[in-house]
Amino acid sequence: MTVDQAACLTVPETQSAVAPRRVLVIHNPTAGRRRRRQLELVVSAISTLGGRVTCRETARRGDAEDFAAQARPGEFDAVIAAGGDGTVNEVLNGLGAGPGGLALGVIPLGTANVLACEIGLDPDDVEQVARTVAFGLARRIHVGQANRRRFLLMAGAGLDAHVVAGVSAVLKRRAGKLAYVVESLRQAVGYDFPKLSIRADGVEYEARMVVACKGRFYGGPFIAAPDADLAAPTLELCILPNPGMAGMLRYGLALPLGRLPGLPEVRVVSARNILITGPRGAPVQGDGDIVARLPAEISIADQTVDLICP
Image 1 (spheres, rainbow, N blue to C red):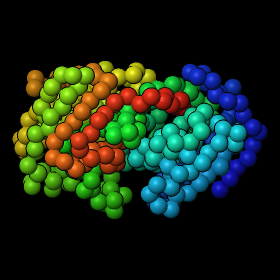
Image 2: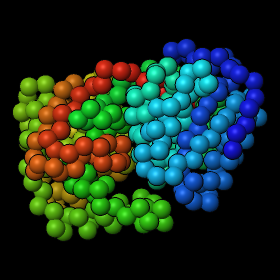
Image 3: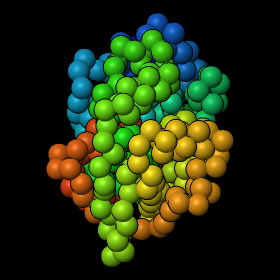
Image 4: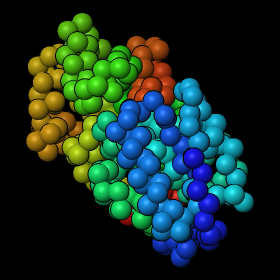
C-alpha cells in the first residue's frame, strides 16, 4: 500500500514540520482486522493532509528493525512504527543501525500503547494520529540501552521480565492487557523472587524487581516514575524490594492507583549508569519485549532520537 503526494521538508529539531512528511510506515499484518482497519484510516488521513506514505509489512520478528535500518533520508523524513511498544522498539533499534537523520513516529495499535500515553497521543483519534505523523513536533530525546540494545520507555528485571518472556502471543491478541494479568498470576506461583543486586552511579541497592524508566508510565496509563523525562539524559530507577505473592499484589494494586512511587519501601532514584546482577541469563525486558539477559548494563545511549509528538 503506497500513497505518494507532494514531497516535504526535513523536520527541524523541536519544531513542527512546515510541510507534510514523507514517511515509511512499518506494520505487522497479523495484528487483527480491527487494527488493520485503524491503520488504513490513519494512512488515508495522512495522505489527505498531503503526506507521502509508503507501507511495509513485516513477515517475521526482526523485519521491522531491518526495514528501519534500510530507510534513507533521501527518500523519507521519518519512520513510523504502526503497532505496539515492541514494534516501536524494533524500529528504534533499526534507526540506530541506519544512516541517521530520520525521525521516529508511532501509529499506536498495541495492547498497552505506553508511548502514546507518554506523549499524549490518543490511539482512537484517527485525525490526531494522522496530523501528528504529518506535522507533529519532532522532539529530541535521550534513549536508554540495556547491554547495548536500545529502549525508549523502560527496561526491567525480575518478575515483570519473566511475565513478558512467558506471555502467550495468541492470548495477548485475544485478551489484551488481561493476558499479562493471567501470566503474572501463573508466574508468581512458581517464581522464587531471587535477589537482584543493583549498582546505580556507584551506589548499591537490593531488589526483587527493578525498572529503569525513561518515561513516566508503565504498563499503560500508570505512573511509576513521576520525574522521568524522555528528553533528559538520565534514567529514573524504580526499586521494588518486597518478595513473594504479597509483594506482587501490593505493587500490582498500588500501580493503577498511582501510589507505587509513594510506598515507603519503594525507592526511585536518578542514575545514568546502572549494573543489575542476579540469576545469570534471567531475562531483561525493554519496552515490553525481551532485549537482554542478566547481568545487564543499563545506561543512556550516546545517540539521541527525534521523536514525533502531538
